[in-house]
Length: 333
Ligand SMILES: [Fe+2]
Ligand SMILES: [Zn+2]
Image 1 (cartoon, rainbow, N blue to C red):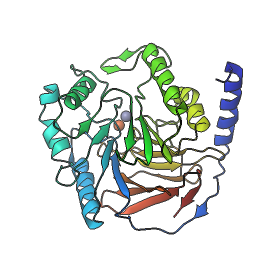
Image 2: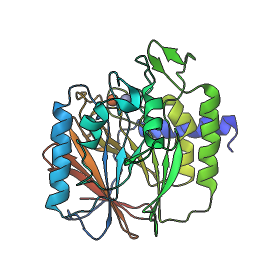
Image 3: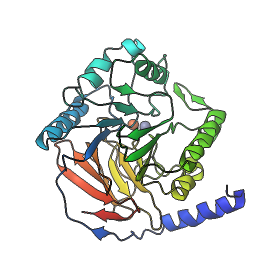
Image 4: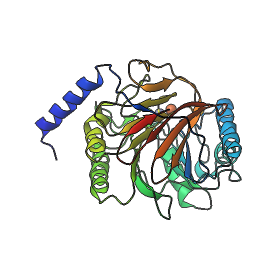
């Protein structure tokens, strides 16, 4: 563990670097078509919006995309803000059918859907939506997978290529209160407990070529929510120390891919799943390589040699892609 002073020095050096505005340079690579023999995950963030017009467009594009490229989806990642508004009846709400089961149908996505909680899932309206999500997973018989608020899984289950650490990023507000109206957070004790668990998981000997961490709130974001002070303090040094390949997030309603000089982690944001879009605060020319106000979803393709991340828009058009090698090298098409 770093001393408090060392920790602050490191954080300061890093944020000074991050503020410079110079983009790291990358190797350029060709645009490659999806490789149907690789393992495939599709991910979507900020999707369970009350008006599901845009959600339907994105979900339809996901289905077309999978069919067009003859892909077998091995997992879905539901990046949080799974439910906006109320979820009447909890696990019995008809929204589960209309906005999850039928929206991302099993006939196309016959695989587990790994979910993490967003800030909207932590609202009590008046029932707890996140409790309903845990219960929906516990009752079984569906693809919804959320064994606890934070958990780890290997992907794919046999001969895994990635270790995925799914986190609850609903960390306490800096000012302290754990409830503001209907909005709740983890308690400081639970946040500390998760941090101990995260460090223990990251310290275990690596058994897969790739290590992925996902949390609803981005550590760094060019969107209106911006960079997250507490996650930069508590999680970012661990991502760096343990050479995490990707940090996947949602929360800002746009699509991003951020890289920082000397940082082993690629920061991916996929928040275009259906909720109203946000206007970016920082342009990709200042901090990138990619940030766009657009609806969409993301595709992560995995082989032992590389990860390929693709951002697709609501028509299934490729809007950004990069490869990441086990040694951390990034190649942008
Ligand atoms: Fe959201
Ligand atoms: Zn959010």
